[in-house]
Length: 447
Image (tube, rainbow, N blue to C red; front, top):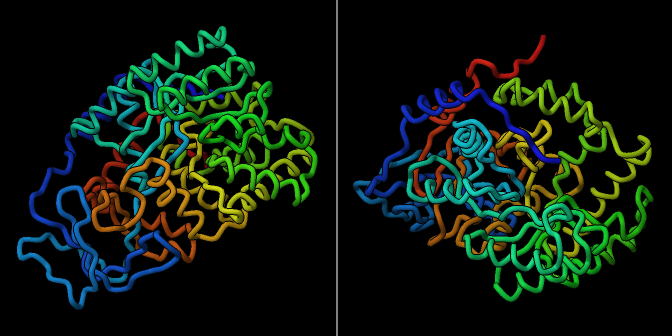
């Protein structure tokens, strides 16, 4: 399921000019203090009440009880009374725009992520422009989340032999990609050659489970992430109810292999025809997407994607298996990453991450465990100081109007986003969103 993002070039460019005119937040040498805020540190299922959190540069410098904290006289104060401060979210399965997409779409997608609280994105299908965009974000030339990037996908169509797979892994390592993306269609010999070379070079791996390889061999080979809970159903039988003992055995095997899973529950509900097309089209966030993009998605729908893969009763079994597998993975301590496969098949960048949070909670995970998949676990996976509200960590933070540990839906109640130490209050985020929303040619809900 490969996205096709079509936007009229002149309109997209105009949007970016307006976005740029709003202005990026400028570096401020003075510290910033969130005063009297309830901190959701995400290092455990807890809330720290009435704290002062100080930011210097792009780093959290201190977290102290407000009653005893010493606020620098030159600090910028953000009143956190009645609000909750948590880490920014990671969207760990995204598809960034390609070089063939019109100018302006990359900037729009990045803005939608940040305005919805996403401060880290793992791009799962690489194009050369992605490496350039990452450098532009790091230098401050583009406004967007931090990027972790997979290279061009390795599949049965792109890899011609084991030797060719090795060559492509070497090229991706040399070009600076963070990981190798595994796609369907690889033979076992090709897969083994790719994995062996990736381990030798120290480049990370993740993606699908090729049928010729199978989930057991993928886990034995050290593939780091399994996307979409791919391959587990094939190990038992397509469309068959998976008994609890099988789920637990596979979950334990996944944990013991050190593999991460990124379930993408929400988009798979659509693929299995459990979320109806009309309901998706009625979502307000669709108005941030051009009509031509929606038309492309409709073409995919007409060709069969989203119309289900089996009889309705079988599709319900498949999704129930997926939800039970996810909960079992979580229960045994296998690490899980938050991701929703945007922008793809009616999944709008940034907005759709909240649908994924809700789907994971509905599958039986606690609010803390759901949020950990997009915060604490992200830092652990990236081996970087992000994902918890901790002194010395990167200041990627969300200020919320309600407690997210009571309901993940409260993450949508954004009062502002801090990204790498720069503060973007709610009104500024809404201005940026309005520019995108009001673009001529966008899809509009029909009354």
